[in-house]
Length: 173
Image (tube, rainbow, N blue to C red; front, side):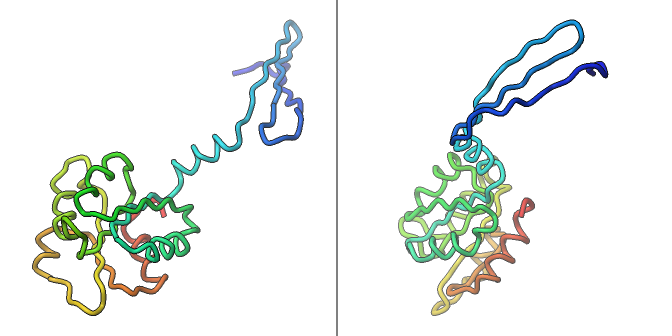
């Protein structure tokens, strides 16, 4: 707690991308000041990593990635794509997504197997996994229940459907 005769004064620095801020502490007996630099790009990265919705998208389609980025841009979404099912586990450990969307037709390891692997790992089992499939085929309900997936999304999907799935499964949205 500072005494009532203590003041912190913000002294404006130059206006630039990396703005300098000076603060001065004053009271009746002493005075000192210090400066620090606000690195706006660095702060934005930190805020995005804390606040952004982190989506791991296990799908071969670059179009689906664009749809995810556009549909979820309100959440400051960061989408990391993975094309092969065998890579999802390693990328998940590194990226720490808020939610995983996996196509059931992934190569090397299908979406059901990917989901089972995520749910078997103590570090990753709390991350919601949503299985996606194309409308021309059927979702295998037995495999869906066996792999303990948290949700399902049929392609092509409506943007509102995608947003609803995310809102239902990710607490920070």
